[in-house]
Image (cartoon, rainbow, N blue to C red; front, side, top):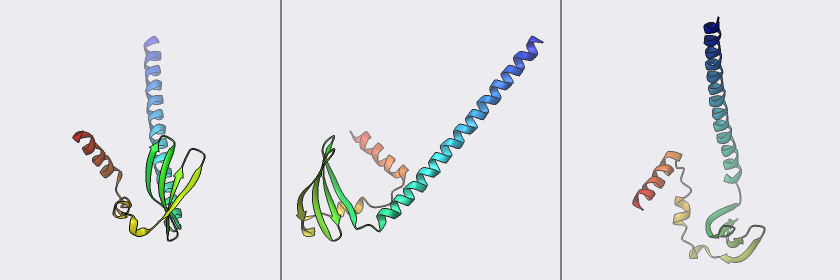
Length: 123
């Protein structure tokens, strides 16, 4: 009788483990597809926008300088934790936009990860 109870207990524990793993994989898959769906929606929102961030330079943890394209004008702004300050308007001829255009290419995640790994190996 005791052996029967032990084998039933093991079988029940194994079934619970398998069920938990299936639920975990399902939640992971659901999260993955929900994230892709939200990214697609946001990408389409910003695609037809008149406002684009061209470049960002980090000064410290909470302060950045950004070059923003507003319609056909380029503007430099300072972004702080709670503030955004207008710095100056920039002429397009003063800017090197080749790097900004390279950053808009559609790289896959594994390509970006490979680049980061290559950079870390060189260090």
